[in-house]
Length: 355
Image (cartoon, rainbow, N blue to C red; front, side):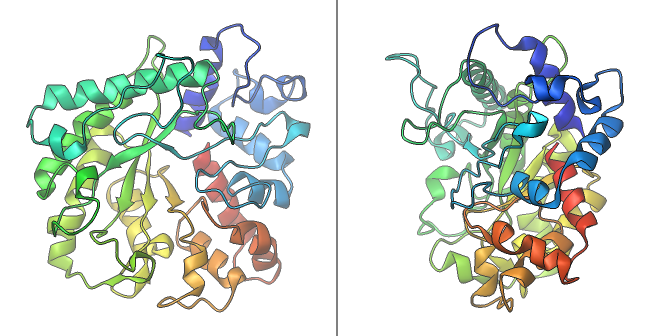
């Protein structure tokens, strides 16, 4: 709900330019509809929007709308309601994933998080986050793109920091992470998010920030088929504290669930993990998006969902909201609902959390 407020509130900040943008409530098809009526509550506006969407439109809004696989997850558009496509995944771990608007007008690229983390400087960590948040907002407002070929626009949902714990120097992605200590990682990530989500003059966060990769993800080899055996103590002592601190102290907006599983359950279909975020930590509106292709992986070793419909049902029933990098939602979500594997209300709940 808060994300809808942030996104709709940004309408008044857009420059009066003929630029492509991701904003709802701009097209003539939308401006007269109740979901764009700022005098109504956010809840009322969301309910109005959902009531106007068909089942297929809702599916397309939480998946690659055209059915083509894309890890950045450009959603479907609903032109009849004035809803444009939106690209969810913009990396924000070392800089805003984008190309230069013009020569010399580029997003800042920072040293690897392991180097920045080694400064032990909270002020620096927060300043880095604020630079990224400011630049991402600017790129969004000026029609910045993540690459020339796709033309996908820079939005306001940044994925990063990467918060996994370095457990082995051979991990392969240690340079993406601030360190090997959960407390240190929690401090780094909390300040980083406070910077990225700094309120602007109107009280809206510069961007919305999402954490990766949730959780117990500390190896690359065979990562899509890895079932981590983790004790209850180790989970709460090593693999959850940094996320908990960032949700509670910096209002994280959500997570990307990781490829691996924990103790026999894949992370992108884990009621245990989604309940920790939304119930135990109180982040009731937190969004959970899959890593690239992780929903498709549910039909493979060692998870073995019977088919794509069962994989979709497992995903929605257990709290994951958006599928990135595979197209099982497009192919089979309608069938999963029609066959009774999952109720449409779970899709509605997932869609609400994207707003």
